[in-house]
Length: 296
Image (cartoon, rainbow, N blue to C red; front, side, top):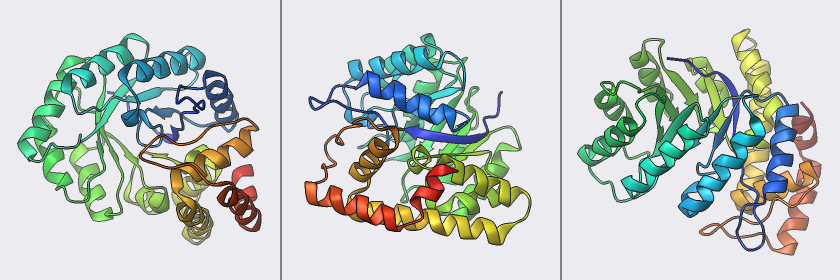
């Protein structure tokens, strides 16, 4: 099974004031990131707000992304949903339109390991030819135990691991025996996950400074860890700044600046920036290393 590598933005979904997908700006954003030489896109996840969108919009998003990319880079779709029927519908739709893989968070209300495993087994079985990757985003879960129980799924291809536990991610990497894709998903830990051996990175701020993370990987691979740490710290200061304003809203506002187009407000449960917050965000970004990081 193909192993995916490199820098993959968790693609932001531009939105109109009525919460529909802004297709025009979506295409501008993809072109901007392709010019930055990203290696793929992870679409419809937490950053892409897919879990807050109706199924019809998620299908519209998939169709427009894939028709615009036309194979220039691989695209993995997050198709997780509380309803297994919706998740299977989205997975089969993504496969029909050219996705190279599917991924899913553990849906809310799946409280036992048995229910989580059953969900993933049914989902993967619905698209047996398509690589399947669980999206680990639950600090209370024994992720290693879960991954061990999923190893008998024929199209199991690895995972997107969003967490700070480098010991846990190393165990998952070793479990794959060099045959899995393992993406790190916590931007603040990009360097350390690469040092553990992840094949690539998927993340929110890869939308706004993908070159910084590519350089972090390159520096780690050439054992220039001091320089990599310095760059990671610069990126982390920008991330901390954005968290202080409300991360999803700040991310969309920052992207609007970069692509010179309205990326829109976040969907509930996230809240938009006030005019005062927007002005302060711009001011703080100007005082940070953001411009240099975004230019890489």
